[in-house]
Length: 93
Image (cartoon, rainbow, N blue to C red; front, side):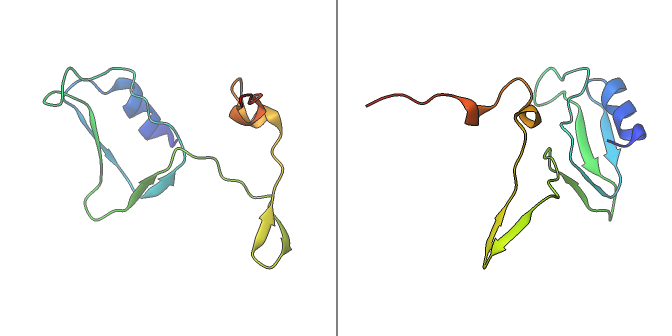
């Protein structure tokens, strides 16, 4: 996250509106303070006339073209942090 937006998420208080400028943000925005209700909350909105995309996803760039429309990449288990749902043993009947 850009330093200005990060500072805003850390300091915004209930009832504040954070204006975010153009860009693609791949972060999880979690304000340090929460709102009290839908009527009194922290809101984030795009600056007038600007396009903001908040994805909260990682950008994977090491794709390999296997052929046709098939692409492949390998992610290390560490990519998922402490929780890797693909590593869990599935059992049942």
